[in-house]
Image 1 (cartoon, rainbow, N blue to C red):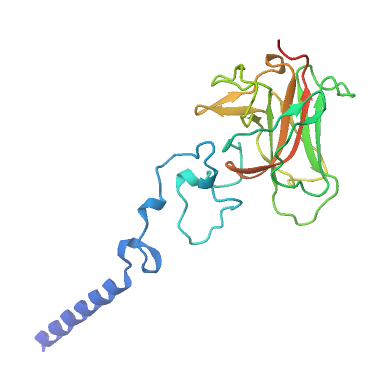
Image 2: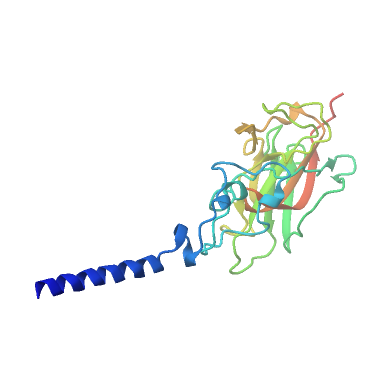
Length: 251
């Protein structure tokens, strides 16, 4: 009788092993699909300029059970902080015409979205110190239950800068520019102005280092200001192009 119980136990163990083998997906994937090692990519790699095809256009993290994109195709989790350049930026402000020259506005601005660019010279309240620029945005009217809408401001001089933030001779500046921390338009009261102060609040990532923005006196002339709607650090589109004149141009 003991031998009978032993034989029965052995049979159940064999059947359990077969069932377990049938239920366990090969390769550890879900729904019996093997994990694709090519979807993981090199760790810590960020998109290179011009490689916009590596970033899922207009997609925010969904939290659903799909395979995570590679590190090269996504920015860090969470809302945008400091946007990064992913393609050459041709936006250019003409201080004589007082408008952007052929601006590439990639997305229509929200209805009633307002912006402001105030230099020390144009500040009628005389609150700004020389060499400072106050840049702001808001909605004219309140919007109920609106989802987050992050705005990042980029400011760039007429000449490109080198890895140390010093002006070069390249006048066709295709850099994104010095950026301020992205802010949610609807944080707090969306009808109240949200400001960033140049150069204090601006910096640029150059050769893996964050370099503070230079003074206006480093590159007198037309400076370009672009307001961008940011979904992540690598997903952002221009909605408004503006600028200001910091004084007579060099040379």
